[in-house]
Image (cartoon, rainbow, N blue to C red; front, side, top):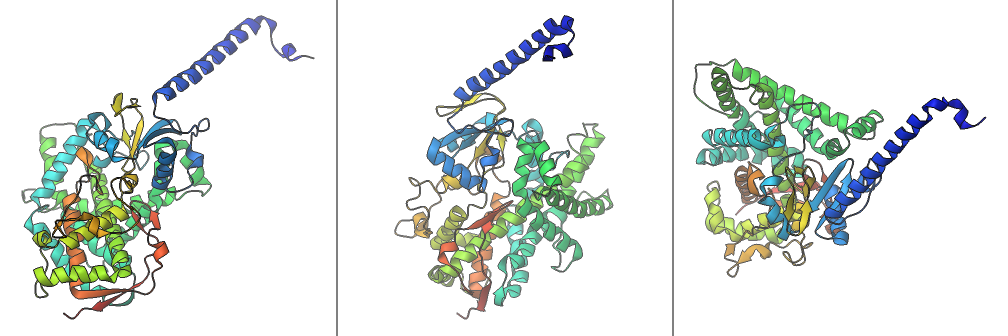
Length: 501
């Protein structure tokens, strides 16, 4: 019996037509893919459906950096069902920062099925939320002397907790840094032993270590569900961590809503958002663009990013200070000359402390805590230099590669603050290609706060303590773990010995 005996002979012409159409569609899809591929920057070919995802065998920023050495500073690859263009040099990145068609985010969110935070929004709604968020934060002291006073007060609460041997610096500093962003978001800092604070800080840490898998959501949302089901990713931990953070933030929102609604005083970000929400509600504006769910998501993003990135950068700073005690002495020389030991440091002191600033710049370059930007999406066809980027392509800015670009940074693997000093070491210079907070219209909105924190924490610690490592292997200084931010993998317990001038 032949295969044809299973079919009604009268249906064979129709079947043949269907098969021919299917074959034509498949051929057309292949030709379209090849033609599209020809327009894209060079890069590796992947597998059907999954693209090049199975071959990513390292942290993405390191993997992209290696591909750039093979295919050039701008290359493309297929990840899942998405064309991805990766930019790895300053010449093209500065053009991309200025390109209006590369401001959008992918359509999926970090938390599947949820409303986007302002960080994940695109277009006019993103511009409106970013503008309003910055306006509210400025109203409550962001970028003003009140901000510096708040940071100094928190640092003075934190410093005594460091004294002694075998100090886990990350565990000590993270709750302190989190208190600063809490003050702007919730209107108050918390005692380090407060149960809600511990819940918030613990889950930020959990999310930070699980976030690396969240990028799969942008490329293969169905696959991450399968992998999570079989326990191959931490994505479920990521979602549970986010839910736990949002439950604490929701309590803060509820407490603010319960306050006197006739009060027009804006003490913190939640106050400002609620006031704006009420104003729009009275005017009958679309609640889908401005609601309490988005408030909770925005506050979650501010809290996570505002605490994790600073914690990670300070951790790199402590690593290099412990490994290179001569840098401690150089910074302490500037402290002695400019500040002394009787008053707290001010941010304006930085203008007379060039080596201190050069050290912090080099920490930001070498640490590169934001090693790749959050994903961008092209909203129209565009060109970056001679490279074509099609509409709807996903675009990655590999900031790690910029901070290791040899023609910008001679001997880039060497930690050397002197590369930022000019005029015989009397001035610190920050070049435009040092981009620890990204750049352009989607740069980190907390950059000004972060810079003040980094300076005041570092100087305050060295004003009071000598930092001694229990043991640091110089070969391990550059190894990192990467979640929300890139942090040292081998930061050992440290000794903070009271300094006597």
